[in-house]
Image 1 (cartoon, helix red, strand yellow):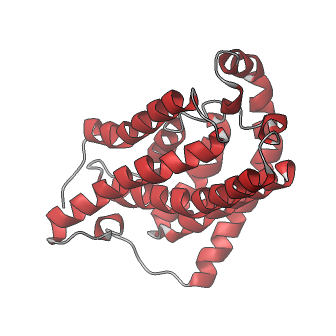
Image 2: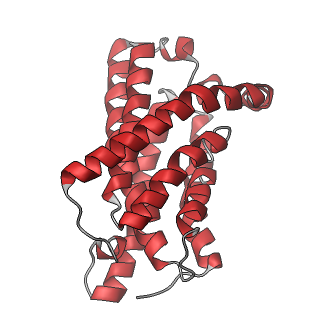
Length: 240
């Protein structure tokens, strides 16, 4: 099994998100659809394929065939009911953090965020629901559906295979701190959501650690999907 050093880890994490973010910033200047829909489309055709390509290529080198095996190195089976219970407990902890930590972090960075968004087209602010409602009902419905598919399935499943699966198992310096490091880098790689890093790290670090100790990334997959499902429901409720 190939081992990844620190340089290789940083390159694999940030190359895809840099390509995605630059594409989003460029195309967003001329966007005639909701920017959040544009982002999800770009995430589907840029971010997910780039991350999956790394896993597939590693599997080819290690096993002779293109597969997702490199994301499951060292993983052990766990009953589904245990996975779900752990995921829901972690989701509950994340819910408490979203109620107490996220609002505080939003207030701290409110002025910086407003200043940054003032230099960008209105659509880059995904919380500007008045702007979103200016689109036709069919466009809004399409946006909600695609946002749900990307944010609940494509995005979190790909990211967990990549971060908690491939990167965590292949990093050469294995230690109990590794899942925390990966969780920090995972949060920082969200260039499109730069002002929620404290909340993201506090929410995802425990889940990453538990999945690492249990040797079962499905814990994080279910947890991540639950968190994003909550975000999607909140978004849909707000604009429809």
